[in-house]
Each structure stands twice: as C-alpha cells, then as structure tokens.
Length: 352
Image 1: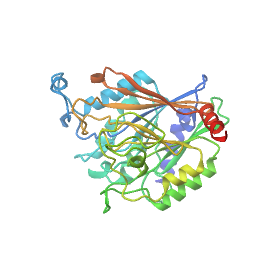
Image 2: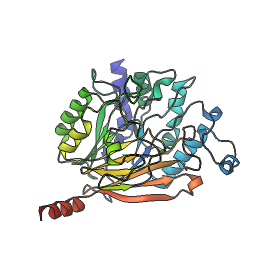
Image 3: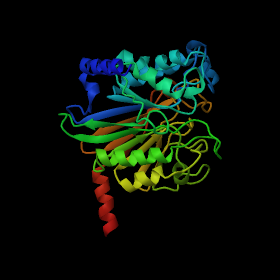
Image 4: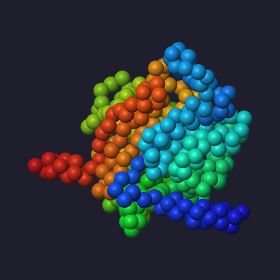
C-alpha cells in the first residue's frame, strides 16, 4: 500500500511539477484563496440557510451554489493555491462523495489546494484519517496526513519558493484543531505535542522566513484581541465581528510560541461563520475567512465570502474578502497584513 501511494504521488508530481513546490510567479506575486466552512453535504438536496426572501426567489439553492461560488472566486482571482480551512463537509450519507464534490471547482481549473479538518467534517461516514485519504487521492491535493503519533490528522507545512525556485520565501502551516470535546467551549484544541511539532518544524524551516498558520477553531487570543460586543482591544481591527468567538477548549500556548518565534505574521481560521475580521495582536494578524458555504449558517442578508491573500517576494502580505453574487462580487476590506517596510517603520518609531 505504501509503495502504491508513493508511486501515485510521484507520478502526480512528475505530471505537473508545479505541485512539487509552490512558487511565486515571474512577476513576484503569489495568491492564496481561503474557503471556510462549506458544510457540503448531499449536493443538490441540501438546502441553503439564512437566505433573504429575494435571494431565495432567485432560484433553487443548495450545496451546488457553494461550488458555483467557489468557481466564480477562482475565475476572478486565479489563485496559485487554495486553503480549505475546515468544515469542508458535514455529516452526510456518503462523505466520500461529499469530499470529492467540494474539490471539483479546483479540479476543473487545475488549481492545487491544501486542506485541514474542522469539527463537523467527520460527522458522516468517514473518520478524520479517511477524509484525509480521500482528499489526497487527487493529484491536485497538497494535503498531507502529518507525522504519525502526533495528535490529529493533517498537521504539515509547505514552503512557497521564489519564482526561480531557489529560495523559500514563505512557510505555510496547516494544523488540526480537532472536533468536539468535553471542555468549557465544547470544542477540542491544538494539543501540546502539536505545538511542540510546530515550534520544531518552524525552526527547521527557518524563523527568518515569514509564516502563516491555517486551522479551523480559533485560539483564545481572538477573543482577547476583540471581545464580542466590545471595542477592538488590539492595535487594529478590520472587518465584522457579528458573533462570539467559539474558541478552542484549552489554550496550550500555540499563540505565544508563534508570537515568540517572530516570523508568524498571520493566523487564518474559519468556524465562526459570521466573523470575517482581522485583529492585529502582539504583532500578529488574527484573521477569519468568513463563511463560504450556503448550507452553513450565516446571518440573514450576510453574503457568503472568501478571503484572498496576496504575497510578494519581499515578504509583504495583503488581504481582502471577495463577496458572492448577492454582494455583487465586491472586493472589501483591503489591507496590508504585514510588510517589511511597515515593520521597519514600527521598529524605528519604538526605538525613538
């Protein structure tokens, strides 16, 4: 089995070498589209939630509207890779079918993706390991199971290389924040062995290289940076905070380790569909993707959305959200997440 899997992956990489290493384009740009909380289930028989009457009058709405929106975003943005940040599917009668259905927009456009699991993905007919296996069957999938013995499924990293392929310029981490648990929040958490793995892997890949973390359930610091119903308590908040932070069940120090490393510029999550903000806290941007799926809950009148990240070879990260047709495909909340120029200016101001 291992030999067959190795052969399959080797053939996939040889067939399309770009997937062997992510690279900046010749113009020095690299784009990531994040899709959060699709909640894909039974396809055309899974209805949409929290739709305005005028939206419902536009015609039948189902999971197929979700994949249609994904395709529209991909056509508009033409990303280099897609980040699927969990709850990609939800309990269905055939999770293998659901898992294969949500990736069709990327497969039709030859766009690679990497994914992680949320709290709902394994509520159907596949466990977490099975979901990862089905994901990885596509040559376009950059998803990995992660080290054996480590808590969860899908803890891994990818590097984005310079346009000539000679130098890693960004580290992208995917982590499994688990599902439900006997905890105050009712959710699992990123465990100490995962934090230790992240610290070791980040140091191995190089803490001089800017890094971005992706997982599903927010860490406690999201709530600290911007308490629900309160004022932004961080250095800067951009976006909408429409619901409380449903945080991980325990805080075992991932944020502090990432902050101490100095190279982690951004954390991207899903989970709370009605939040789409970024909050700058202790030098790190804590960002939501915003809900993408129509079968997932959302406030009535809240257009579905995706987050787009634009990277530059000098380390600059910019971001915005792209709304669906009910939001006129608007591009909103454009911001610079981090840049060496801004960091240098802040350091200079602090030293005065």
